[in-house]
Structures are given as structure tokens and as C-alpha cells.
Picture (cartoon, rainbow, N blue to C red):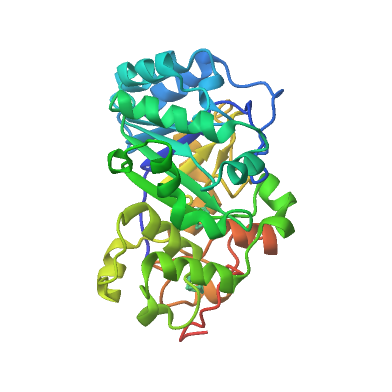
Length: 351
Ligand code: SF4
Ligand code: SF4
């Protein structure tokens, strides 16, 4: 089905490449030395979004709270009447910063927690004491009633702990009922995750068991005994808060839009490159040289992904509308964004 998307609805902006951690799976391979875009350039970009179809802007990094102008930038977003989210490792959120975040009017903050055990999290982010600092950050945010989410990337180092992450937070005195949502996302092959892939990746069977544990047999009447494709896993984890054991395939079809890369979502890197999603690290333009609108509307790749014009299995699949395959997997493994998702085990009727 041909779709006509204007600009994306959601934009994530990696406003800095600097980070006080060095996670083994960082998709942006964030380090400490690259030059970020200036305050003026980020503000000019925010100005471009007013009145467009972009409704949600989130700031990530690197670690966005490292930027000394972060609250100025958030204020600028609020003045342009956009929803603003923050993705952080939580370690810099002391009581004062939590008050500033609350006062800034940030609509939601996502904090990464990568394990139940302190040592698991600290090993993944390669910083001793990071787990306890992040816990403190979450406590401070909740004390100021800041809408807070918890994000986890699933990998070999932590997959046995995913279902206990809430318990870990409770053990440290956090009222988990105040947390908006816990998301667990599969690892994708980008940045350091791709470099360290063999040590981090789970086998399809391990992943499958994990998602079954999380959601029961959801999607089985669509995907049979095949592991759920990544875009379906992502949709479920973002939109479903509880185990949806009674979700029929018809309901699944209504909530699943599949891969959002280049459709309703785009990523801007700290140097201004425009990407289809954080994990497809192939620039289609740069906001320092062109407007997002021009880049978006003239990109050959955007047109193709919006219309699900893929080759191979994904191009001949009856589930393309609700799935579409992971473009990051296609790009990294096949060298072609528009090719088939090589991780998918499903065999389409038309293939
Ligand atoms: S073939 Fe592609 S579109 Fe079909 S289910 Fe697999 S990943 Fe999704
Ligand atoms: S390419 Fe699509 S499915 Fe893959 S990580 Fe990006 S948004 Fe998710």
C-alpha cells in the first residue's frame, strides 16, 4: 500500500556524542571528544520543526545532561509547543538536576537500566557505581513527579535478569508503580554493539524464549513457530504495558505498524546527520547543510521505506504492513537497506 508521510512524527536528536559511560553496546559509539553542534544550530533546527508534522522531539546522546545548555534547549523546544523527551543514563540526576528537569516541563525521561544485579549493569556500561547512581537518579525524578520510563537493551550479559529488573528497583526503595513503562529492546547491530556482536548477541532460540516469557504466545497465529521479527517486538514493547495474553492476531494487526525507520521516525546525530533510525547509521543528509524537510522529501530511501518497497522476502511478505523487517539488520548484514531482514525465519505465502 502506498503511503504519503510528510515529515516524521517523532525525531530523536543525539545532541551530544560525549558520555560519562562507555557502554559495550552503544549504537552511537559515543566517546568523549567529538565536537557537538552549537546551541544556535540546535535552536535553529528546533525552529524548523514548528508547524510541521513533527510532534515529538527527544534528546539523547551520548549523555544529554552533559551539555551545559541542555535546559536552554529544552526551554526552546517547549516554546515551540513540541513534546520533549529525554533519554539518559540517569547518573547525573542529583536532587537539584531533578528539580530543574521537573521545572523545565520535560514530558518524559527514559533512564537506561541494564540488569537486576548492580554488577551486570556496571559491566555493561563499563563504569563502577553506575547502577546505584542511576537508581538515585530515578528516585530523584520520581520525587519530583517527573514521568519516568526504564529502558533495557537485551543481550547475552543480562537476558536472564530482564524479568527481575523491577524487583531490583524495588529492592533499592523505588516505587515501581510510579514508573510509566519498562521497555526491553533487542540488541541491534550498530556502533559498538556491532563491533562486540559475537559476545553480546543471543541465539534466535534464546530470544524467542525470552519474548514468549514476556508476552506469552502472542503473534503465533500470524508467525506460527517463527520467532517474532524485531519490528513486532519493538511495537509490542513500546505500546503494551502488561502481558497481553489475550491479544488476538486481529488486535495485533491494529496496533502494529512495524518498523518505523524513515516512516514516522528519524534520528539526528550529534554532527547533524539525518538517519532513518538510531540503528541504521547511513546518513541521508545533514541538517547543517539542508533543512530536514528538503532532505526528507527528496530522499530516494525515504520513499522506498515509506512504501515498503523491499526486495527478497520482505518485499513479498503478507505481513509487510505490520512488520516491514528491520532495516538496520538488512543494512548491516546485506549492505542494502532495502533488502530482506536476514534475522527473520518467517516464510511468506508469496515467496
Ligand atoms: S519477511 Fe520481512 S516483512 Fe515478512 S515477517 Fe519477515 S521480516 Fe517481517
Ligand atoms: S530499522 Fe526499524 S525495526 Fe530496525 S531498529 Fe530501526 S526502527 Fe527498529
